[in-house]
Image (cartoon, rainbow, N blue to C red; front, side, top):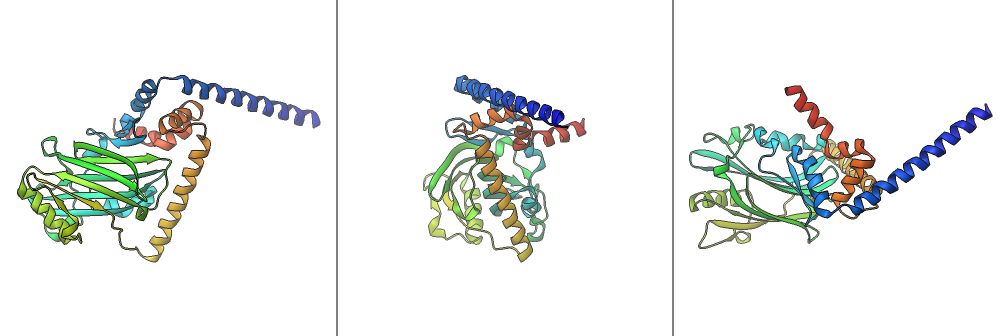
Length: 299
């Protein structure tokens, strides 16, 4: 019995040393890799998820050809988000233009282990009634309908990142950062193709509760800017308790992520460390496994 216990202890110590030296080797490898090589390597692995890594700001953002585009957006997505570890404020703006009902929506909050903000542009193929807007799934706009968008996300007044692009879904995600939605704000600027669309959106923005004095207009261009700070009304008691539970989980996951990857200071190095040393956690962090299963089921 004692001999068996001794052998088990020796084997355990052997594997502890093995993993320790393997970890040191991986850490050294990541430190020695050129920055561009690391960013390119990571982007190859996050591209199938519809995202890319911005090494200059240490943020992730969505690509124009992201797979999420074909699924559009509807209010049902906002309602079920907490069941997918997403707790955010959202502001849908519906307006009619060019014989169609449009939806431009803003989000800010916690997405698992990411603090983030989003701007999405969608439209229906006709004018919808007020009742239909709450149940319809809007299509993402086509490339010729992309709008020029600028956004900057703030946490307690500190900038987490800025993005500017012609896009249908512009995003900023800071990995390993935790925040409650009310701690975030987002400066937004949108340029429309003509004054008719800009004014239709501005009127809808005003009707949604924005003070007209807080909306800045560019007199010579079809551009307007404003700040998204509002929080959604508190849900019922049980949903509110569930949202708090989800946020508690998100905070714990952030702490574990930061502890495991404590040897590095930026998301690129942290994720590469998980990729080489703990690949199952890397897949879990980026949900690559679930994405592959979904794709394989369609083939």
